[in-house]
Length: 249
Ligand SMILES: Nc1ncnc2c1ncn2[C@@H]1O[C@H](COP(=O)(O)OP(=O)(O)OP(=O)(O)O)[C@@H](O)[C@H]1O
Ligand SMILES: Nc1nc(=O)c2ncn([C@H]3C[C@H](O)[C@@H](CO)O3)c2[nH]1
Image (tube, rainbow, N blue to C red; front, side):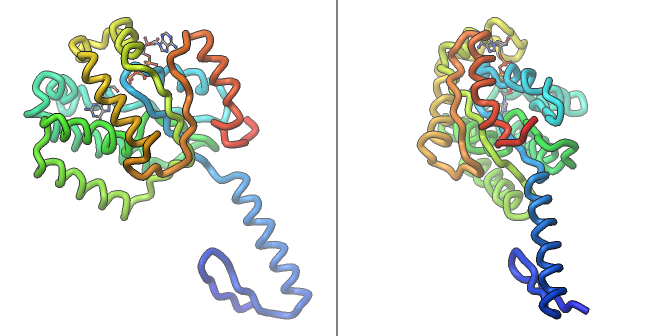
């Protein structure tokens, strides 16, 4: 009979030399198999209109990849309330309520059972906090008290929930290009977004992902999002192996 003590990250197995070698081969084989088939999560981060959905639509065609877009429609209809429109119409009044719900919906996505080898999600609980909440607090649209309550929730979530991210793909697109694309797509709630708001969000993304003002939960792959659409597809393909973290899909 083997006696086995589970210690940090591994097993200590005792028994006869021959049976010990067999057991260790078994454990090594299982660990290797586990590692090679470990599911991974890629978060696509970037400003409004930077091209995240376009990126996700491109990789959604690859078998073995599940794509989860931002739950914008949930934010637009919380039991009949359009919290996205409320936030844009009166950010001082509604930023806290909106971000509270964004944080909940992103946590729901992070904790959903993963159905495929690779999950690609649009944004994350991290950018909601480090990019959007930071901007709202800096711009005076969120009080200190509201900011610390959201931060307490955020810190509890990271300490008590499994939020797995293995790679961040940062679509770095200039605010001017984002503004052109937002106008081209014309989502009702975004019609009045001024350039200086996009500049402020660009700055919070740069603070986090380039200057590391806040922790990054995974390595960051920066892609230049300013190219025209046809060239972007080439950028995606040139980086496919890095984005899929070597998974041969
Ligand atoms: N490289 C590009 N060149 C020109 N147009 C683009 C490019 N990438 C995306 N677009 C267009 O710009 C608009 C915004 O793109 P997309 O929806 O992918 O951005 P997004 O980052 O998902 O936006 P949001 O953060 O608001 O969800 C869309 O109409 C899309 O077709
Ligand atoms: N304020 C704020 N906080 C967030 O965490 C957040 N995440 C996304 N968005 C806005 C940007 C687009 O208009 C629209 C779709 O991305 O929703 C957010 N806005």
